[in-house]
Length: 235
Ligand code: CA
Image 1 (cartoon, rainbow, N blue to C red):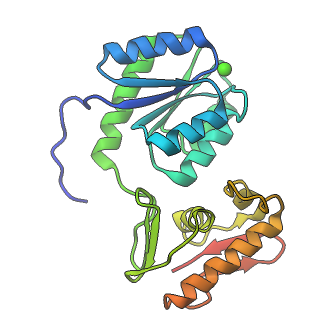
Image 2 (image 1 turned 180 degrees about the horizontal axis):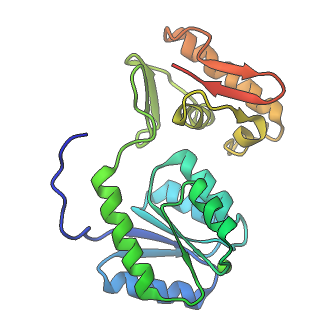
């Protein structure tokens, strides 16, 4: 890794606060502003996903229990898009929940009982500092380049010209080489596509993705079908 000088303080961050209890959201926003950050509060999981896609916040403070899309699902979906730091908040103190949250890619996990905004701010600061020291895109290894900021992908420097859904699929598959993702996991990624209501839609997008990879010279074996399960990616 390149040596980067570490700033003493993480500096101002744009923070997406996903919390459906207005009083709690307002309290968190006050503390964030007092610490110099710029909070945006959203009370619904689906709105939160769209808000992040539109505005690419620096950190997500995420309540577990939400209307629309629950915190764990939102966390999983965000992780297919980005390595943005995610701090989870929950009223539940179950160890299993904590582990699920961290497995799904949350960077930290805080119980709301007893609720301490100071503790939340301390974790936000620690997570921001850590993420700014190590920030890197999800998958940029040669020969496949996945540029998540630019929504572009290339094989050995040749652009793949993917649709958004193809890009989402490739980004997830390539995020862990060799790991098999089920069709239903992949189906969750497909958005804004009237035809994407069945797992067959996944097969159709994967077929197009394979064709584009092949046209770029990657061969037809990059995306492997696992019969009755789903797909995996390998360089
Ligand atoms: Ca809640």
